[in-house]
Image (cartoon, rainbow, N blue to C red; front, side, top):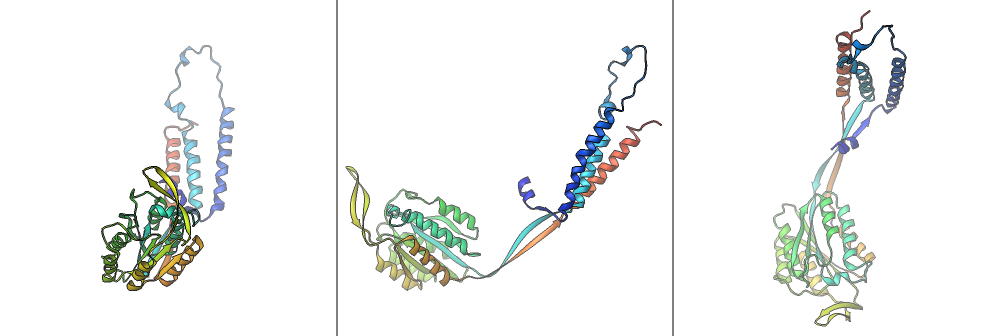
Length: 335
């Protein structure tokens, strides 16, 4: 809380603050002055002086402490402390977007650097950072589908959830494109926003899941949701790890995905189909989608400044008055 307060505090006249350096010199002068102001009286015995120190003696320096504290408060008041806040007003029409991402085991293949999944996460993060004012959600799928983040304008939450994605997150294998798409549609169907889009990214052929892709596609059409489909991966043969009864073996297999299905989903929902064969190509795909789906949003930023010198001034006056009262009453010196 204190750190947050300090981050928002500034001074209109910071050149006044070096005056605070006067206080250590005043303290030094006071200590030196009182060190040599010791009265001496000649007496024949000292037995009656035992335990003569009282609370007044112990607190005799209190008026001076109050004086330099009041001086410090006055210096802060003269520097005119201000607390600043930034407020944003969003005006216009935003777009609701769901990023639907395949996180099956094949997404760990290394034809992308460092692999397909990590490259897809990095590009998705960059995409989210450019969509100012839009509401964004994240759905992941393998043989199951799961809403990782409902649509929200809190992009920090979206970015944190994307960063947390890893292979094995759902502990199921498969590529249920229909289920992933249907869950994404479910996140958008009640949205009042005119423009709603899904970016569906996968590297596999649809199998598994409870909802066929054709049904999910019709759901998207019903709710006027545009679907951009992205097929990732090269068509060349690659070494993949396969688990069988004898353990893990390496097999040479041609990586394929159902390009015709992805084209059909995109075309019939008003979106577009893209094929990315490496990370650089995938970045271009998301850049194209970013250009095709422009938000009509104007964000106005206001910087509000509030003066905070008043309470420093009041504190200084109170401390100064308290010092004077103590000097004229409790610590009054006889002539």
